[in-house]
Image (cartoon, rainbow, N blue to C red; front, top):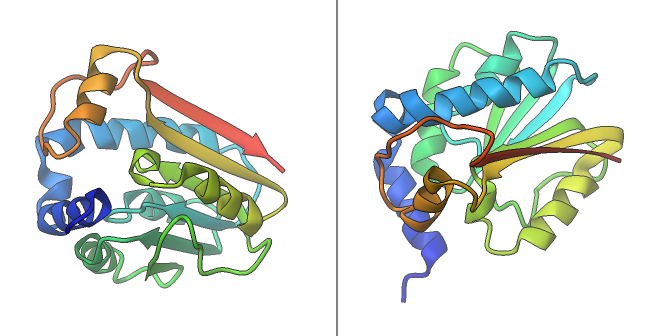
Amino acid sequence: MVDSRDRAIKRFDNWSGSYEQSYTWQHFFSPVHDILQAHVLGVQGTHILDIGCGTGDMLRRFSGERAARLVGLDQSEGMLAKARELSAEDDKIAYLAGSAESLPFGDAEFDIVTSCIAFHHFPDPDTAVSEMYRVLKPGGRLFICDLTQQGLLGRAMLFYGSSQESVGDPTPTNLAITAFSL
């Protein structure tokens, strides 16, 4: 039997080649990344982990900043292949396959951990958050940005997660960014 995680991985594998050209990307995901980037810009730290990195857009954005080490983690090999292709000339960025619930890193390796529009895909959110905290350095910051059940867009995208296209723009009523410090 195929579980929902396997279906999501397959969906993202199939979508990876056209992801950053899609309507959803241009009108939802990219603007959300703009919002998250603005929150992270003022935070001190040069070692950044992006969980559920998709095609690596957030890491490519952070690479232009002060970052020394950028790591993306995703379960979709298709998304990771596209991320590696798009970041091929940037030796600061590395991509790994893995699960948010079992991060393949030692304790206290990162100054900043982000997860943008991926958290709702994690089957065990408590374990995922514990793992995110485990890999943060003392004083590190965790940024989780995801949809909420407030607002029609948030409810629709969470309910119809298998849809590749959606309408509407991110607004404070359907998007939540939460920053945590150790």
